[in-house]
Image 1 (cartoon, rainbow, N blue to C red):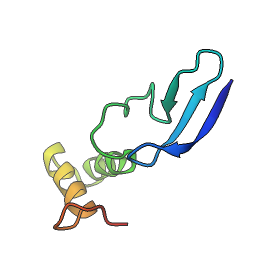
Image 2 (image 1 turned 90 degrees about the vertical axis):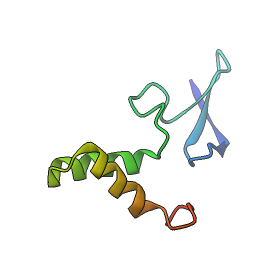
Image 3 (image 1 turned 30 degrees about the vertical axis):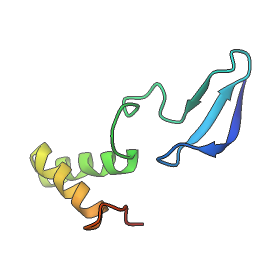
Length: 77
């Protein structure tokens, strides 16, 4: 049984709590995206660009990061 908490992570993911063991986790826990330093949607966009445009992984990542963040480093909605 899990209970959704009202607060969210710094990246905006839902926080959940296991009622029996009282352990807190988020939507990315237990997935390959768990330890990424970027939001999941950006990581998937980079993968899509890499496959679609046959870019190097470095080029695809740089394009994804540059597209998502403005000059001041703030996320663009």
